[in-house]
Image (cartoon, rainbow, N blue to C red; front, side):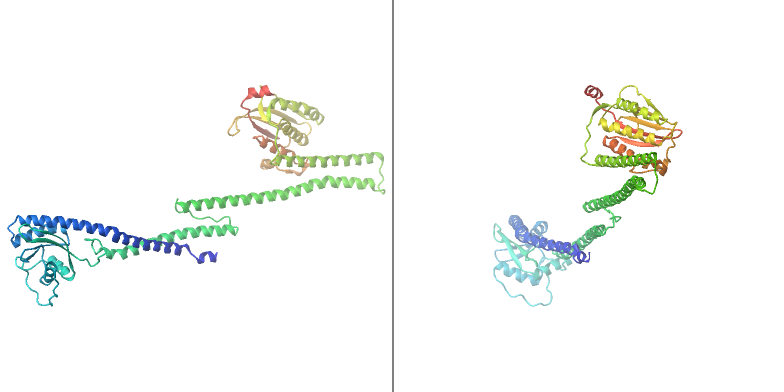
Length: 505
């Protein structure tokens, strides 16, 4: 766990994010230099060419006075040219700028327009503005002129004026030449701030992401250590949230599977103990009778010997019945066990079974009654197995209902079968019954609510009944009788195509 935490995904994500920012900045700079700036320069030069031609036409049509020329140039410059400068150069090299130019910047502009470069005059007392300009220029004009004096000018384009002279478009060479013309330099101040904000936002986002991933890691570690009660808090319905919900469901299923395995292990241990006990009882009796018969010190007459041998035979038969029922239950629970399903009239099957058991009930002093249903009861099932269900229930009644009691078998519609229509077989007796709290357990192997009820039985008959009924898609329950005794109810689905079933039967 400590080794996994030593390398956090946070630093991987943060490094990748910063790398993306750097690559994006490089690509953006390259885009500006290779695409945006040339395109902006081309547009600016085209705009400048249009303006100088418009200025040349207007000056040619004017009185060519300095104030008129300055007004024309200033209007065009303010309207379209932006940071550039428009200037008129007469035939006698008189220069009329379209805006305010400080005196110390004029030599540079004159040298550029005349094609020569003269040294910049030393700083001295400020001279007045040229003729025709305001005596006290505004702060904006003075600052603009200061910027112009500190930067170099370049000629963008020029156009001749009919009648003499030319109009020249000059542009200030920017402090940051890689920016497009006219781009605000204040934008550079926001670039580091944007990087810092983006980096901080990315760090917070990655931190939150890593925290949620670490919660999943902790959950997986606890589950790996055997803590199946661990859960992760699902905070959002996104991919990680759905992953957390899936892990929670997986952990719940693992916990349920663990409980099922523990239950099965407990049942297996109990089954082994019950089998050992059930096998030991007849074996002990057989050994006791055999030792008595073989002991020469115990005088026995022929009648006693016959009784002991008969007891040995009965215990052997009991042991054989137990083994056969264990083998039968194991076969029924095997996944590969298949029933021979066919349409059959369950009512006729039950009636035939009841008739076969009536002599045994009369011999035991019990009354067995059959409630003949009105009509047929068609189901799809294995006839031999369904007959075995009723046989086991009747054998159970023979074993536990005292002499003088009665057992009633009936067949009718099952209104409580979930999802489909069904038939219900009921075997009700008026015997002593069992406590209601023990009824859900009567179908378990070797289960006996009262040890006294275990005499003569293997404790597997009802477990076999339940397995057969479940394999037929039905259910079997035990409920208290009215006013006493117990009622076994077996529900099976109705065969849909009863006519076809009747014909095939």
